[in-house]
Amino acid sequence: MKHVAVLGSTGSIGISCLDVLAAHADKLTLAAVSAHRKWESLVDQVGRYSPRWAVLSDPSGREHVERMTSATGTTEWRYGADALVEIARHPDVDVVVTGIVGFAGLHSTWGAVESGKQVALANKETLVVAGPLIMELARSSGAVILPVDSEHNAIFQCLRSGERKEVRRIILTASGGPFRGWSREQFDEITPERALAHPTWDMGPKITIDSATMMNKALEIIEAKWLFDLAPEQIEVVVHPQSIVHSMVEFVDGSVVAQLSPPDMRLPIQYALTYPERCEGVSPRLSWSETWELNFQPPNRELFPALDLGYEVARRGGTCGAVLNAANEVAVERFLRRELKFNEIPQACRAVLNAHEFDPSPTLDRLCRLDEWARKEMIQWN
Image (spheres, rainbow, N blue to C red):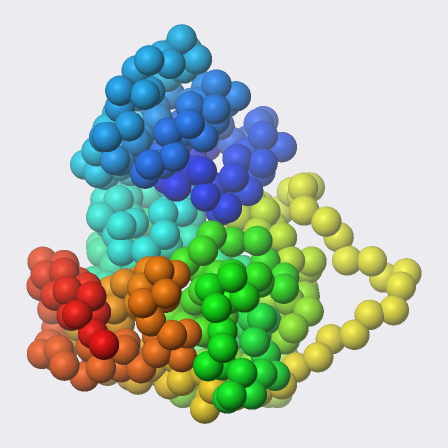
């Protein structure tokens, strides 16, 4: 029996994870849930699943929760960001699902890795910001990092078809978002409402906007470099609107191995939780009794310059990932508030990245300070 802490349980990844846990109660038990501000959703989850712990990282909701303690049963409530790290490190937790979006998930992920946990990594920003530090920490602590992102989980599965020395390259697939095929003129008219209407996936606003700008794919390039120990030249991106092929690995002999399934995050989550075992799944299956097509095309890097940022940061390493991630998080917030245009998001990120003082071998403390600096720079950018 694995005891699982789901950090970010009220988000899309967390909700899908709870579905998987409920379907495999003979193998997996829910030890902890967490949210930042969604105290009502968290109270509901506690009432339904009765985990040992619940963490509200924004303590301003504590009063509301304590008025509803009758609904929480025997669950122990904790408050503040430090409580996330405590749960991630707790010896009674076997698996930590890091479903917190953005830089906010770094410290709890770090705690889980440092404690040698099995980490189901949905927080790509951890590797974007501190990839070499995290991977070295995992090697020293014995932690097992299993990717939950559909693309990296697909790569992880495909890599089991050969030895690492036999890999020529990996191919990350991208849906193309809602603006695939749009003209440069149309990009000037993109509103937050249009950008939030993703054609395939149901995600939170930040990840949805990242998908629309293809910044999510830029971050995934960086994540893949550190996670799979690849050169940036070994990572390619292809647009695949159907989101059936989640990614591919090409081996040196020319063979290409792909992982296919309907777009449903419960499948990669389940694989990360039950690895190395495969068991009956809760996600839908492909239908082989009907006709369907798979289309692939190269991305338009002129209209989606975020991809070039991803490759540059993957090549340079050092402090670049922390700066790009922080700048993008604030740029997305400003776009949603209509303070930036859609096509200004990568422009602004480029400006902040170019303005920072590069350090090829930063400490975690240095990365945290640069995160704060980049956010202030992006707030002032115009």
